[in-house]
Image 1 (tube, rainbow, N blue to C red):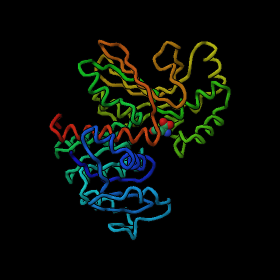
Image 2: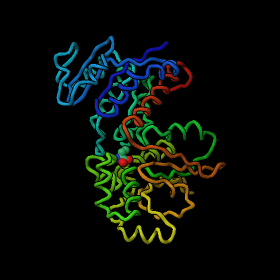
Image 3: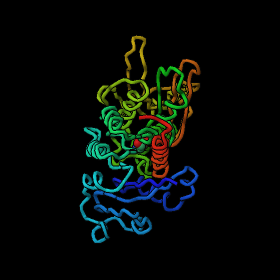
Image 4: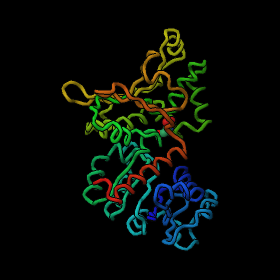
Length: 348
Ligand code: HSE
């Protein structure tokens, strides 16, 4: 049985959910053919911890916010990210720190340090993938390791790997998606009669919205995801600033009611499409969809992506786009991809 040593970079909701799954459900991993052992954790609040024989997950998961790894064997009040990523005995670095939509840092550096020191990287962080994804993938390939990021779009619901693996052999012409749960939830609640601000407040209470919901409502969260899909699935080579972006902030209750009366539903749609001349055009905008559109029936905080293909026409997948456990599952699916690579089943 192979054991993979993990370094968890960031010990917030997602990496804690992964640690809980590793502690509570070892059988899930045994059926996948490997065991996972956490040998290092870094976090802005807790500091860092390196224990090559395996961190006691019960103990660290019980530590309240505001406490520190300082005083534990191998512990420090300082995150020491570069030292831990480069020198800990990890095989796989699990990057789940905050997303910077400006330059992707510090996550871009975390990924580079890991790859340069011969470690695989799995991440749920949109920033480094949207802003430096192709460069980081090339760096990984030249260092003989994997850089996997299924959770950057639609959390654990398969999109990137689904398109690569299951839609192989088809020509992919476009992808359209509802890629932000908060804005979709808000539009649905406006259909039920709430004002925009009331619906946003509800989404915040339910924990769907980012701490600053401007990224959800103004479309910049979807902009990063569309850039990832355009580059990954259509080879666009674009930057998020190339994605023309309009959010739902100007959609009024009146707009929503009028659309409903005509059988239409407003949705915030992220799209990347290959034009006849080969260019890829990427946009984020609210669109009033007719009821027979594959994305019209997607309600609440659910996400969906609809692929336009040559032989199958539209192929649509829907599922959660956020959540601790749902996003931790994306990391597991990435680790499965690392395992396939390590077993020689796929090449870099
Ligand atoms: N705030 C985001 C959403 C979380 O509502 O979809 C996932 O990126």
